[in-house]
Length: 189
Image (cartoon, rainbow, N blue to C red; front, side):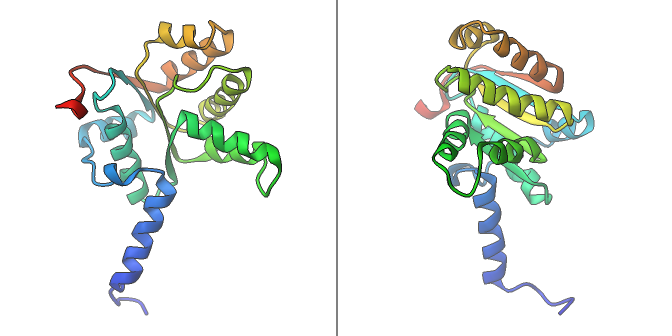
C-alpha cells in the first residue's frame, strides 16, 4: 500500500531495530550530533580520532554520529574495544560465526566507532585483531571513529611499544581527523 502512513507499532519496531543494530546505548540514543563535524567527516571521507580525559564527551560524540549514520540508512555500529574483542574471542568455542566472519563484519560497516581504545588488555590477539580491522577499513576507505583517553605515547606503552601498535596509529592518523576534548569530567558535575 503505497502512500499509506506507517503504523506506529511498525515505526517503533523499525526504530528499535536501528537502536539495537547500532550498538549505541539508550543513554546516548538522543545525543545531538554536531552538524558541522558531521559535514566535515562526510566531505573529507575521513573518520575521527577523538581523544581526551575521562568524561569529556568522546562517547557522546561517537554515539551521536553513529545514530545519525543509522538514520541515514547506513550500516553503522558503535562498539567498545573490549566488547569488540570479547565478541570475536567468543567465536573460539564454535558456533555459527567464526573469528573471520566477525572481523569481516566490523571491517565492512559503513561507519564503525570503536569506543575506549586502549582499555583492552594488550595481548598479541588484541593487537592483531584491532590491526586486522583497522587495516581492512583503511584499505577500503571506510570511515572509523576512535575514542580514547590515552595519548599516542600512552597507547604505545599500554600496547608494549609493539610495531603493530605503531601501524594501527599510523593508519588511524592518516584517515581520521583528530579531535582533542578538554575540560572536567562531565559526569561528575
